[in-house]
Length: 412
Ligand SMILES: *Cc1c(COP(=O)(O)O)cnc(C)c1O
Image (cartoon, rainbow, N blue to C red; front, side, top):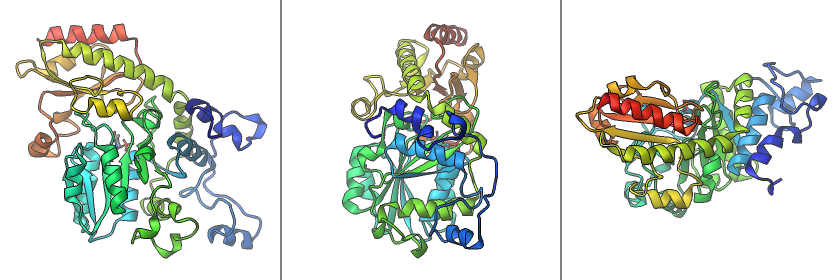
């Protein structure tokens, strides 16, 4: 099993469990509850003494098949899926942190993650935002009550790359949980387990599904963190090997308390999408590289944020850690060029929120997803009013180049 390549393993993982009629996909199981032969059986299943399924909020066979696939992709022990990426992040933090705890987070964050971390502050959890491109900033923020460090791999929208290896080593030395949001890289490009992350979060809505037709999120336990040193695991979940306690609590408490369950239909869409993750990412990443080089040569463009450019401050880090430079890029137009005019002139790229779609999407971030956080926080994150975020799709590169070229001409 372990010797299989990434795509081979995904393509054949459903069949490993034996499926009725020789079906090649795990069927979509829509039953929300599961019957048992006897009262003793259902009691044993509820008490964890016997394998079996209880209720659809907590378990579903189609979702379990996807969880197995995600564990293979991340090289992890186990995975718990959620209705969205935000649900995965919220449930992780709500089930693992308590009032009086401290969280260190990268300052360069997906906007809604920034929002939920500010919500945690209302419940007595201290949060310190730091520039995570240098592990020294994380080290300086650690406190005796620091329970976790949270970073994204490639940050949205300005593509800063966290000092993943440095922070991983720091967390290991201090016995602090390292949580990595791998959405922007995806497990095809990068496995956070390789830098000692204990938990890996993915928004399945993005590259893993890829087709923009299902929402989902996941948390994978890599098996690296020793939960016996973590003070917040309830006695009920301190069963079995301590490397699995965290996910046990996230699944039992986090999923139950938030009720943010992934639907079996969505799990099926995401599973099918994941089959072509590697192919799609190779294509979107090579498209993005060509476009980044194109934009860099345009007089109307002030700055291009893309890790594949040698001018990117963390280009070497990205080359070392990731298999490719990804499909996320931002451009900042010169002040005299109207970014709305540029966006409105696009004929192919869609004006839409979301990332990791097969289609190229553009959005003026300061005026939309980062609007609510206000100008000060935007400035800290390097977002200007003219910043346009692009999520590059798998279209033919000549068509993308032609579209952006004509739009820049119209805007200039
Ligand atoms: C989109 C995204 C999320 C949230 O995922 P949803 O499925 O949209 O809730 C979290 N982290 C990152 C980096 C994202 O891009």
